[in-house]
Image 1: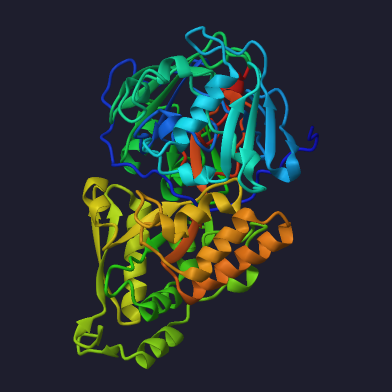
Image 2: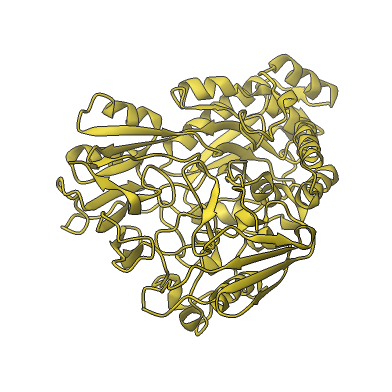
Length: 531
């Protein structure tokens, strides 16, 4: 049995399930803040999930309020037992993982958790008929089987060093979900789990409400009611927080700063793996041109974006991994270099026209860049990017649109995208870059295809020696400089403002996806009211 703790604070960028902007919730007592009550919390977040079913990807990285995984992550992102009563026993040279379940855990409908529920969850996620675009993250799994009611054995196709961190995947009840189509069943909007909270209502585009699970195996939460108000507009979210309609909210830096001197509220800042980048589709004649890609990478002023757009709450992004990550290749840092950008464009035949925009063989160096409407931070990134590009002679037309408009065009048009995952470099980089996942939902949005990057991804996933893995991911980051399928811009710190009525709140290092799973409410079930 392994006794050491398994580090989880590694890394990096993954596909994030971006969702369409939603309208602000209406008034009413359910949507109102708790007016000082210590056992009820209303949080304003910018978006909602498409589904609440782990079979389709909800909560796959942990911290779901409705479900638990075999393991969970603590405040330092180290793995600890959850539904499993201990860390896994690892045998067969890293190919077999055995988990023993915690006794007497029940789903919220009163039925006991068994090993068969775990088997059902993983097998359904891996089933090709299930519409889960994250199934490639479990590629190493060969077989899952129950050994009695309380043991689950995973057999892997190859040793996969990051596998334990994959077992934060929430477990669903086979006796409920197994009776439905995982893609269309009511479980997607009316889930049953083992977690600290029960879903009591979901008004799409407005709010989700939860109540404490009095029979939670980890102890009944002190916060008895939790409401997530869906408010896409940053300014509206800040206004409703200031008016007392919300207890807390996630806010961009400029708006969070307006609460700095508010004695009744506290601001929390979390470092993240969450980056903003411009996708450069290979199917577009301009963005698919390697010289254009390299010139854009050199033309962008990342530090200015951090200073002016993020008010210093972030870091320049020279790739998908943040500067302070242990897997980051430090030799890929590069300053803005407009002279070099112009030089490589000239050398490749992109000549400047009378309007200042370059052209080659009769084709102008021009393309459209979409950002999701209502996201001011992405809009500002897009406008700054277009300004920098124009200095090199590349015309970028910036347009805001809903995700319904953007999604069908992601293979041809550039998008100001956001990604980033904690856990291990494989978790985010594989889905972001591997050619086999080109155009698979939000995986590999630009249809990037580079054999050297694919090879590095495979080595990083399968190698057991940490030095071999580090060398592979270093090679990958250097390859992205030579052939950037994205222009990486910034890593963004997440800022939250919350009424100061609870003690011992903390933040974790966060992925891109936040609001529901992250923030100072990542462990709301453990909060204690201040006296």
